[in-house]
Amino acid sequence: MRGMNLLKILSITLILAIGLCFTVEALTLKEAISLAKKVYPPLKEKIHLYEQNRFLYKASFDPYFPTLSSDLSYQRTFESSLNSVGRLWDNQCTLGLTLNYRLFDGGYRYSVKEQSLHTFDQAQTDIKIIENDLNYMVKQAFYTALVKEKILQIRKEAEEIAKKNYELALAKRKAGLAMLSDVTQAQVRYTNARMETITAKKALEKAIAELNSLIGWSLDKKTKLEGKLKTTWINANLSVLEELASQRRPEIERQALETKKAKEAIREYKSNYYPKLDTQLSYYRYDNDPKFNEKEAVVSVTLSYDIFDGFGRYHKVTAQRQALQAAQAQLAEIKRQIRLEVYQAYKDLELAFSNYQIASELVKEAQVNYDQAYGEYKVGKGDIISLIQSELNLAQSKVDWAQQLLNYNIAISALERAIFTNLTE
Image (cartoon, rainbow, N blue to C red; front, side):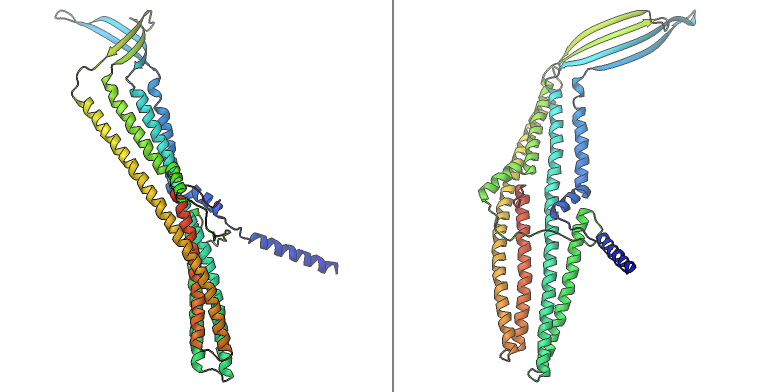
């Protein structure tokens, strides 16, 4: 008896262990976005470019430091004349250290450093732009997969209802209360419902594969999703949304940095109008042999200025001013496009929610219509055509409801992308 109890306990333990091994942890939207950010190739590219520009920015500080150079030379001089050729005249060994530093360059170093800083900041905004687009793509794929699950369930329910209608027609035929055509029409609808279930299942598998592709998982992996779709109206004011977009969109920030770079480029070219002030400290040791007994130290300060070198300085400054105006015009255009994007996304949101509400009402009406048609056919007052059509309308209304639910949630995601802000948290 004890042996049998022990065997039962071991069997239960083994079953639980196997069940835990095959338990699939549900994937949330937040986890999906986090996984996608780790594997999405365009985002990785922008991160590497960000690191590249970070080091280039650090390198832009080099002109502020002095330069120290050394040189070692050996010179051998021979006397050359008609009477004596190749007689050794002198040896000279020289060892020198030179320290150079530019005291003033008209702002050239500063402007180059600032341009490098703005390029570095632009690389950071590029990451934000890619992340914003990636968030939208993952949300779209995640919500699509959730809705495809709902549609599959709807198709399974429609298949069960079609089967129930077919069995009712078959029973009435056996009782002599229905014609053979009733049975065949109900059977055709039942077969179509089975095909629609298979189609919905494959559509779900494709939606899961798209999500798996974004998060770096195997395309055929069975992924269980955990999440809820938004079914209520979000409290959003259009003017507030436009203000949020103008403050937060990284595209605006990136172009604003481009205008700053253009301003610094003007400063860079204007520096050519100023003189250059350099200082140099040199220390030499020299002798006829490598002992370097003689020494010399020289300190010099040099002021240099190009009085005339053509008209390139003027033309470069003028050209860069045009580049600044072009960058400012592009900034205004980006702001215009983003305002339009927010407006259109908001209108799409209103439309999607209205359609979702209407679709919800249609489901209720279609359910009432089907219940009435089924009851009438069951008692012999209705015909099979009305029953099948009402069932078709019910199934299609539920599918349309699910699709409008998806459209509404995607519209929310599109608006969140337009304003670079999460509205559902």
